[in-house]
Image 1 (cartoon, rainbow, N blue to C red):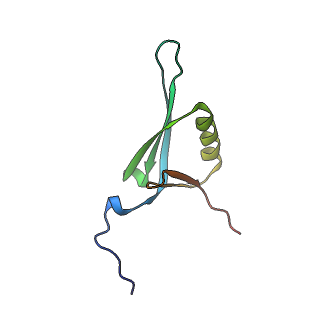
Image 2: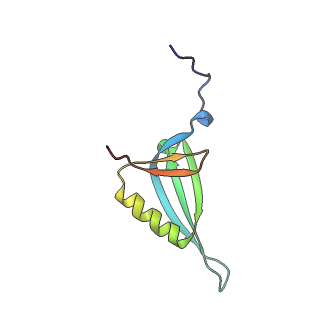
Length: 87
């Protein structure tokens, strides 16, 4: 049986499944651009992450999230991964 480092804690889990997400837009100062954010709720609330996005990134991520049935987020690498494809 392999040795598993103990204890396994909430902070030791590095890749989590995306449960819910919410895009937001915050107005900038007068004459300035606003800011897009994407809140990721991972593993039904066990972890949350908020990403600041450019308008193009927000648009692209909305398309990817809408087209995917599952997504995972690597907390250490801050990488959002979309679904899996069988070979």
